[in-house]
Amino acid sequence: MVMHEERPHRTFAEDVGVRAMLRPVNQQPGSTRLAARRVRDLLRAEIRRGAFADGRLPAESELMARYQASREAVREALDLLRRDGLIERRRGLGTMTIRDEYLVPGLLPPRGDLYETYLPGGHVTPRVLHRAWLPAPDAVVAHLDGVAPDDDCLCIDYVLLVDDRPTGVFTNYLRAGEAARVEQQLFDTDFYSLLHDSAVTPTNFDLSLQAGTADDCTATLLRIRPGAPILLWEQTIRDQNGQAVDYALGALRGDVVITLGGIPRIDLTHSLPPRR
Image 1 (tube, rainbow, N blue to C red):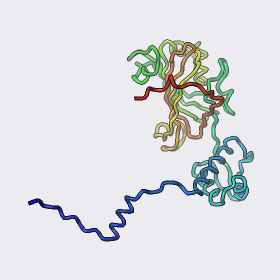
Image 2 (tube, rainbow, N blue to C red; image 1 turned 45 degrees about the vertical axis):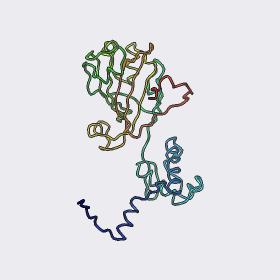
Image 3 (tube, helix red, strand yellow; image 1 turned 90 degrees about the horizontal axis):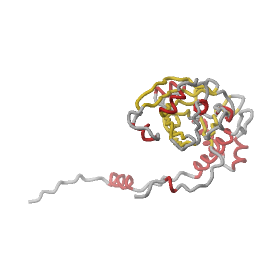
Image 4 (tube, helix red, strand yellow; image 1 turned 180 degrees about the horizontal axis):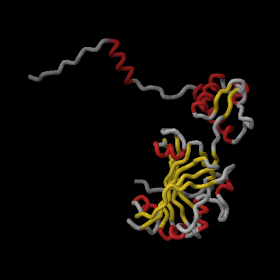
């Protein structure tokens, strides 16, 4: 005899609840929320380019007219910017911008020019944390040309300071041939200038950026709170012969903006992995 397990009886309310959980949910945000997002993004861009010279944002009514948005959408946009730490409401003054963003060009400076020449402002100096020779780790071997496992490379950990304010923390792994020249130089400005001064000509680089959050060590070095947004940095620098000579990993503060301009349309098919 086949025994059938007796299923517990569900009430009508429980049955309706189960069906509700299984019903597809519309994840599309409402029109007000979408409008708030657009206004937030436009205001963020205006703040970045310095459109509000005295740091004061226009009144709600002016923002509504400027962006053709409802009062609710404008207020939600301002709340989003406030939560991002970009603005705050001050008694008697109105809504003020409170955080600067650092615009950093994502291009190599011309030979002989300091990187800081192309920054909106600020003097660039490194605070070296560690500088030593070590056997190249596998990840470094995979990114540098002509480097075999356990070949020596020069490892440099440093904090990049702009006007003594920590902006990024990096670890560079430099190929032995180039490192032998770099080792003799004083590292007192940007890394590209250090290479130039060592007769190493950086010609181009590959760069990957990814959103992340700061661990305790990174937070301490960058003077931000643990868990704060950061940009994770991965870079491979090539010399004039197309050789990958340096591999770098690091993190930038969340208020750093990497700018790229004049990007040409090129054929990338040769660099794309084949489809399987």
